[in-house]
Image 1 (cartoon, helix red, strand yellow):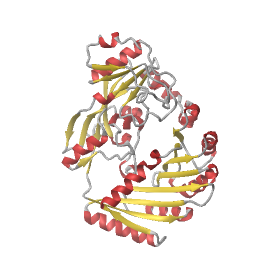
Image 2 (cartoon, helix red, strand yellow; image 1 turned 180 degrees about the horizontal axis):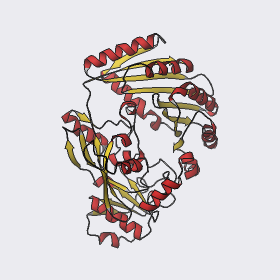
Image 3 (cartoon, rainbow, N blue to C red; image 1 turned 30 degrees about the horizontal axis):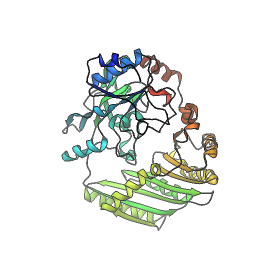
Image 4 (tube, rainbow, N blue to C red; image 1 turned 30 degrees about the vertical axis):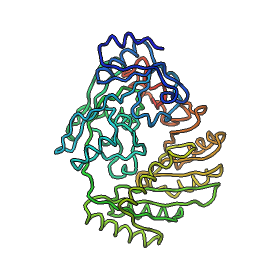
Length: 419
């Protein structure tokens, strides 16, 4: 057990307990203590205590991404941010909200919906917190229209490793003071500082929604459909790919387009999209209401509910056909499924292949010219070194300098993230 006398002497309201192997271990590595501050000052005090005692610390929000990233190298303290769970300020007229890091996105959007607004993120995990989403820059199909947390954040408050609290940005959309710090923190996996609160720009909840589902596509038609949609004046909220290949055979490929706006706009967009699809391919249908909600819920979360290696990779949107052919060739070891943002060129790949082949698959993906960044999100712990997980996204001289400035003792993140 860690000596917590120095932490308790800070005078902040902080809960501590022994770690539970069933809910607190990360890849079998059990922290020595779990700390749950109930204020931003408590978070700052915890970081200052851990830094002075040279204790390795990992931040946890909803716990939905504890298996992401590399296996922790040093884990003494698990800092639970669930005690920071207040909505600080909602300026409905300005379409902004300021929330503490431990607020769950689902709870926040439920509250915002009473004012006809939402934080336009739809990640696959219902328990995800605002701080966790920002720290991992995780998003979902609506990224096509609204972007990632990095695109939506306009202000941030941080507790640094030396126990200071700082701010960047502001609470209005046009405020750009310190704006870049919000971007640097996004995707840092808690390796630079602890997010205590953040301000986001919001969007109106659409009055209507419907989706065009295009099924039984092949590689060439998928690429042609992408070219038609992206070259048109259609404005889908989401434009997704769902592809499955097995043992190198021709796969099952479908595409989903979602339109959400005023009812008349949705009706016109859906009709226009259906007509454009029909000129290429006959196998399409329109869904709405409960059927549409079930469709998108299953689409976003399915890869994470089934076993296998999960990789995220990027490619140029114009290279969709080449990407699909590459994935078909990789499926010689087993089943490969792709859930992708077509218009962005980014996707989640679930590879149901033997453990012994997983390292080879990742190496082959990184060697192919069609892919940019290839990052392992989930895989066997024995393979998950920082080099294998992050590949090209490893630390650069610039990011190393930022890490050294904000966390000179190297206590944050347990080397799980890219920094």
